[in-house]
Image 1 (spheres, rainbow, N blue to C red):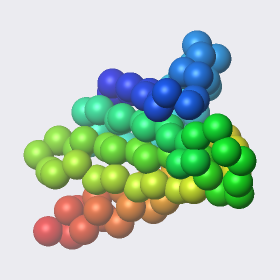
Image 2 (cartoon, rainbow, N blue to C red):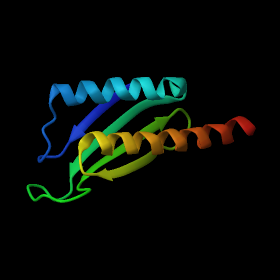
Image 3 (cartoon, rainbow, N blue to C red):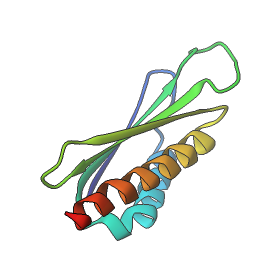
Length: 104
């Protein structure tokens, strides 16, 4: 499973952030590893330098073998919460998508 982490120009894509994202995603989605070929994470600060609540966005795109990519996103006031919310949504989406495949 390949994991790519991208940030916009308002968020520093530090090595610490990238390592944290990769290790968190690997741990969370290990149970889906036979189905996922690639995960792309995109962080964006919606208002740039201006402050504001829920202005950090995390979008996760998972590419599944033989299926169209699936995406989830989450807005929060900081990157950790944005990532955590997007992971929770993606986990639920993968559970339902893959369980439907198993039934067919």
